[in-house]
Image (cartoon, rainbow, N blue to C red; front, side, top):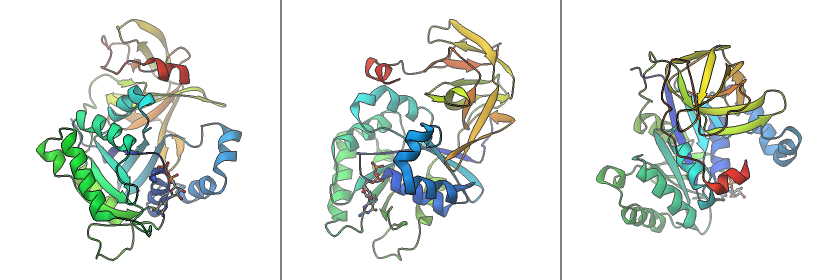
Length: 312
Ligand code: GDP
């Protein structure tokens, strides 16, 4: 076992409660590689860029560095149509930040994604966001969140959730509304202290679950997931197992990519605990297991449900 200097978290919320804006601010305020440039691009011309370059730039994973710890933040859909995808994404993380709009309060997707996170045993951090709104009602919304946790059968540890008040747009988070509103430092610190580092076996043979599938103009099929055990090196031979353990294909990992800021950068080696993207496999889909040839059984994974299948 080892404890890499990594935290993997999901960011979850009802649509429009501010995930993108808060993630951009975390990137700006962190030591993320090339983050400033990436954020500027994203803020300026998001839709055009997405159209022009596909989903390759705006990966679902943003990676920021705080006090030498790399925090992989995975954007998680809130809608019930993506139930299976939410479960697969939550299986890669050890913590979650749940955002709730301080004026709108708890809405259906807040409940849906929180329910999934609690069921996985995560201990979410609550961020009551958009406190700068004139119609913000921070105390009411705090109570609504407490009632929501209770209604979803949260255990005692989960009910004792840490909470911050924030404005993602203005780039600050505070524990107490009387605290000075300076930066997102309280949120960075809470993530480092509250979310456990991934505790996975780096010595076992390599295995990961393909969790997100994308098509990239240059790389072809790109599969993203968390390395569950072992290490992979570039050009390493691998095999792919479906959920029944049948070998789907054998091949080589021609590219290994790790996340820095909003970009994926090629690396020579990846190890258990990191969220990575791999290329070189042509028949692999989600949620198959990509592994060293000696691995005999697939890793557990949530099967694809029909609505997700029709989206890919
Ligand atoms: P997402 O759907 O959760 O990713 O939400 P976005 O980050 O795209 O934000 C949705 C809308 O809320 C946008 O119009 C943002 O400008 C606005 N917004 C985001 N964060 C804040 C905030 O802290 N305060 C206020 N007043 N508006 C915000």
